[in-house]
Length: 449
Image (tube, rainbow, N blue to C red; front, side):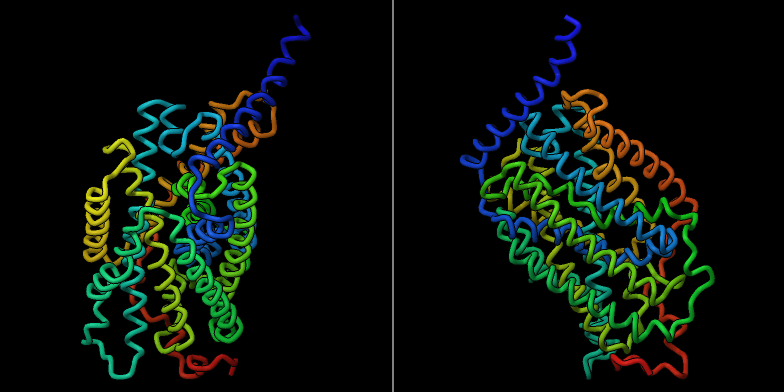
């Protein structure tokens, strides 16, 4: 009997795996979507590097550059691991949404907490996207000859309303997330263009900006807050089930391949962006890196335009998630065509209304990172898997999940306290001091003086 006892879990594990594979094959035949692997991958990458990437240079300033790079790789690894763990948990519990998974593992209370987090994170992100669009594109239009400060194109309220009506609302009305694959590809291309611009300016503008004190110190006291910013950038867990369900063949093997490739590409882009942005401005780096560039820098203006378009194209992915949460909580997961339109319009109208009133989210975005993104990335996927796992306690998946869970709890608690004690200041619309130097000649040149 003593020999038979410990052998039972080992024997049970392969059976569970076989059952999961059988279920996945059945799903891929009966419930598969229209996305191929590339399209789904573009959606994941777009979700990761949509808008949060713009704050990554600031996270280097918060953590210290060397430690910041290491933390960025760490957050990327945890993201990769927990996204796959999330879908594993869905397979083990036979659930198809993040909310169903948490409800099956932690009951109604867990379901309500997750639903709140899963709604708030993308909803606040939508608000920030609108604010970024208004602030970014108005500066772009201001560079057009004949467009003065009093022109309607420089009114952020008008730009937010215009882009909402023409672009984000129509794209958000799609019912199938697979149709956003091409849109996400365009967004990815524009992000790479932005990366090239930041790299060019690191060479041409960097020498003109004085380096701050302790610019290259290994670690700084705000490293925990930096993890919150990185989590905000890398989170895509809230729409992982949507993207997984859109696959033509939604199998764990396909999902793992897509996740590894997508997160790897995203972290390469993110590290390059964060490093080049920080090396240009060091301790003067702002939460929105484009706030650091001078207004009459034409190359940076083109970068602002690309970034504004990228944010507009990322907006619908977040709207899909908020709509799904509402559908699951209030409509049992199904929305008729009429309710689909009504719910979408209401969500976008409220997000747009808030973004018209507030022009700087500052502390709200940091809190969104530590209070919403961190639980969704670190805590909930691992907690669900540990509850469902039939493996021995010392199995590698269980040990890694426990470690990520503890790290997530610390980041969330300490990050929340530090954010309240040292909130991110809003430098909205300020022209940086080095833009007024008499010897500045880099604005309209891509070559160093």
